[in-house]
Length: 94
Image (cartoon, rainbow, N blue to C red; front, top):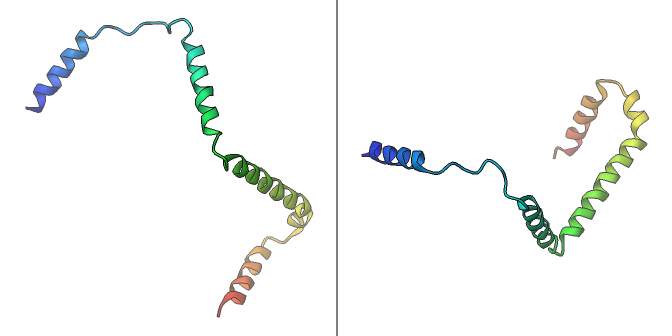
């Protein structure tokens, strides 16, 4: 029963006309115009600009803290992270 569907589908695919080799004139322009219109509609969400600004601020704070602590991060001993982590875990235990 299923093979009958597959045979019909394969036959319909053989009879289908070939797609055009080139994109019609002006198609790219229409696609870009539609894309820009949809992008403008998505940006109309009132809190989208706030979230984007928050992400930028968080990234700048992260880069600033990395720049301030860069020398300390370079000079630390390889095992100091494990020691610090174990001390933090011990202080957080009840």
